[in-house]
Image (cartoon, rainbow, N blue to C red; front, side, top):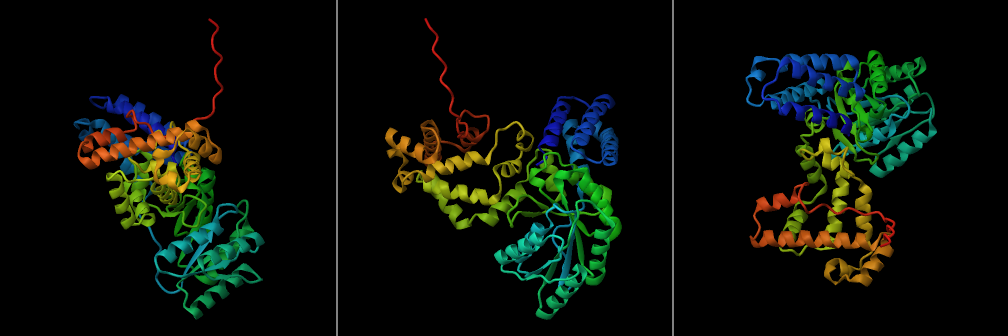
Amino acid sequence: MFETISEKFSGVFKRLSGKAILSEKNIAEAMGEVRLALLEADVNFKVVKSFVDTVTKKSLGEKVLRSISPGQQVIKIVHDELVELMGPVEPGIPHPETPTVIMLAGLQGSGKTTTAAKLANYLLRKGRRSMLVAADVQRPAAIEQLKILGEQLGLEVFSREGRPPDICAKAVERAKLVGIGDVIIDTAGRLHIDDEMMKEVKEIARRTSPHQIYLVCDAMTGQDAVTSAKAFNDELSLDGVILTKLDGDARGGAALSVKAVTGKPIKFTGVGEKIDKLEEFYPDRMASRILGMGDVVSLVEKAKETIDAEDAAKMQEKLLKAEFTFEDFLKQLGQMKKMGSLKEILSMIPGMGSQLGSLNVSDDELTKVEAIIHSMTATERRRPDIIDGQRRLRIARGSGTAPEDVSGLLKQFRQMRDMMRAVGSGRMGMGSLAGMMNPGARMKPFKMRSKRKKKPRRKR
């Protein structure tokens, strides 16, 4: 996410870092590029003007001009202003009473139904059981979808015939009767804002007195999402916004504009279609990712959720003893996929965010690696050294890849094993290890090669 704006900002700061001192002229030039980058990212033009004016004013301060590293100070100022723009931090859902009623509103196609299930799953992980309310009678498919998702979570889905306000009121009554902790209402949307939809959601709000009203917006629609957020907020008085499809938004206009325009915080972000792909929104972490500083805290949190500490310790011991096999590697790939897409994980690593646009990063590569390993026999996975030419041909045919791809994977695996053996024996210091793991080092990550046609030999 935000690859476009990250690349632009990276270029601006790189040029600033080469300045011995910052003058009004080079600050003005840099801020002109920042302004253009934000506008190209589909950020609201009023938000852009205010942001650039504030950063310019602070960058021209006496403290910056006397700084040893003025370029770094400007980066700090931009970071702080991005946090201010998207803040404050308001993660989680307050629970003033039982049941806590949470109402979701938004346009059709924004992802309300899936988000309702994601919120229920989020609360379930925190020990709270929810009731899902299917109030989108305009789309029978939405009701069926919610029932399927509710069944996956083992949660009740309240569905009745009738008017949505009546359905929602009865659902809240039932939740009180049976002692359910939270009620999540999935309301109907339209392709655009109209009086009929607003009248319906306002009546639902009046009948159910929701403790939290969240607007679900498709981040990929950019300023359209911000416009709809303002319209809904004027009528409903929102408590927060949930941005969906943020993983597919390379620009970031909605995330950088919605809080400034509506005054309401971004509460959660949807970063995938799966039911567990809902994240609490932290402005400081997002600002760091936009500026290519990574988000190590979120990366560690994801790892804790998906990787068993005991298994991780065993894997580390195997690595240092050079006993790591392809079976272990396959297990590690599975755990990494649970954390998110390869691009998402790399964006959290400091220094990688601004490079993602130029890197050929694809989950398809990992899928091909998995296919190769799955095509090996159990013995070959445990003892890859026995894989000769005939075995490589068989593995390549079974995985739909070329023999060169199998050879490439085997070579990289042996290099990693030899390197870890050297670390375990003390023959290689951690400095050497860090050098080898550096993206610019000679040992490059495994990459599937496409089949190329052989060039005809020149006639002598």
